[in-house]
Length: 230
Image 1 (spheres, one colour):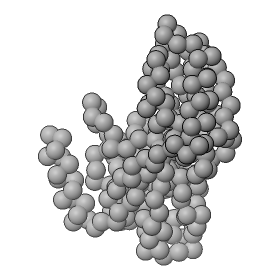
Image 2 (cartoon, helix red, strand yellow; image 1 turned 45 degrees about the vertical axis):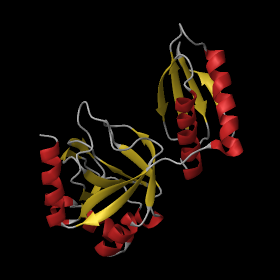
Image 3 (cartoon, helix red, strand yellow; image 1 turned 90 degrees about the vertical axis):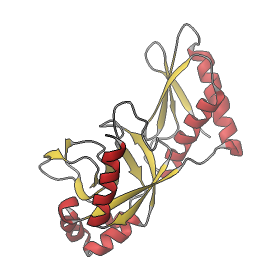
Image 4 (tube, one colour; image 1 turned 30 degrees about the vertical axis):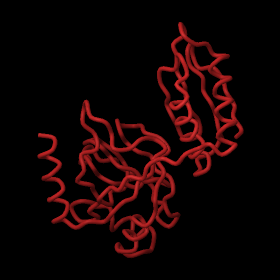
């Protein structure tokens, strides 16, 4: 695995594993982060994955840049030799269209497809989580079918409901909490993805699979979610 490492601030090392957003690069970043966690390197305090890089922060009283860099290169070599493991696959139920995804007709028109075809294409892929960002728990997902690439809205919304599933350019993602945003909304999940003090159901390097549900199923799952977090 090719890796370029450079210092970031007084206690960080940035491992760059590519220069483009791609499935291959995303898999390398995820594999390296998992390897760092398994290695339990003394002094490592945090890892922050991005599209093509992994930021590793360390305690300067317990580790130094040269030592951390050497460990990262060693781990990258192990991954190249076949020691990487796949992340989890998390199923996310989604009610598409209507009040749950009001931009579905616009996405369908842009793609020259029916709404049913958009749903079939969107839910027919398994998406790798390249990184989490923008909002706590917002997953940037790779693997969207090219036919569904759709520009962001010219005028962003000031309020997007929690759980909304959208398309922004070449990516799809989920708004884990109520937020402004400019992505095209095609559906919504009833799952409570983010709550203070509770772990997310996924992490960078995992994969998400969208499972279509109807409005009745949405309300049933939403009721169970409310009871579980009351």
